[in-house]
Image (cartoon, rainbow, N blue to C red):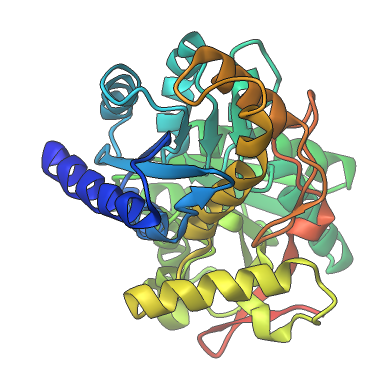
Amino acid sequence: MMLKRFTTVVAAASLASFAAGAWAQVKVGVIASSTGPTALVGIPQKNSVPLLPAKIGDYTVEYVVLDDASDPTASVTALKKLISEQNVDAVIGPSGSPNAMGIIQFAAEAGVPMLAPVGTAAVVLPMTEQKKWVFKTTQNDDIIATALVEHMAKNGVKTVGMIGTADPYGENWFKVFSGLATESGIKVVATEKFLRSDNSVTGQALKIIGAKPDAVLVAAPGGPSVLPQITLHDLGYKGKVYQTHGAALPDFLKLGGKKVEGTILAASLMLVLDEMPDSVPSKAVAAEYIAAYEKLHGSKPATFGANVYDAGLLLKQAIPLAAQKGKPGSKAFRAALRDALEQTRELVGTQGVYNMSAADHSGFDERGRVMITVKDGNWRLIR
């Protein structure tokens, strides 16, 4: 299945490049979990690839897409294939946090910049020699967690329970949120974990309910974010439920239905774009992406797809700078591309504004989040 997807997408990309007037001079690999437990994240990411720039400056760009089926081991195999067989200049992906953590070493060893559209800040923090090759296209956990804690404190939450995925996404959220909550006088009274592939979290939910928290935070990406919340609802939990930006997808509303009414999360302005003033820098970029995605696929994209689209915007700015120091396909070009990405300043993306530095390979600030709730089955801005 993976090889079939690879062949199909390369053919389409090659035709697009030929139409632009030449065969691709810059080659970008994309690893998307379009099947498996992370598919609700990976599908909109894969679907966003045709919207990435086919020509940047004087160079045509070819995107080679592989599906890792949400398997971290397959992510490593896919990366090695992209590097050894396709000689890619950069990689976008993988979709999942565990998958991304597993390939950092190999991307760094090959000197190939990696744009990671994943949730966990662990792919870029703490900064190491290997992580210098990684650039994250989503908000870091502390930016989202700070907004959630501030909302809890303002609304009288004194105790909170947590349930998150037993992987780098959930683990980093346990660490970051617990510290911020403690600083704000909010006590974490229960912490539970589950696997993305689990079909039941009843035992974990009962333990959380038994601790009688004022609120519960679910820290899970994509489809798995729904299960703990509907389980808490079915077991009679009446407190507030908070979610991370991992729940920011249309299927959260579809799968959760009335059971996720009142959910509170901090996430991308894309969810409430119509309620945002035109003065917000990202509104126009996000609207352009959404319109293009809808025209191509007939449905609105999840914010996860926008993370791949933003990777294209970052490359669009960085590739011409890198080309001044090396020829695409060379180590010099890839090293220069890494340096150019690190020097990104005030680049407006779909979900915020990027300002990269040697210490910060995510670059988002408070402009990359808004407070949102679920009301009458839709996302609504909390004012």
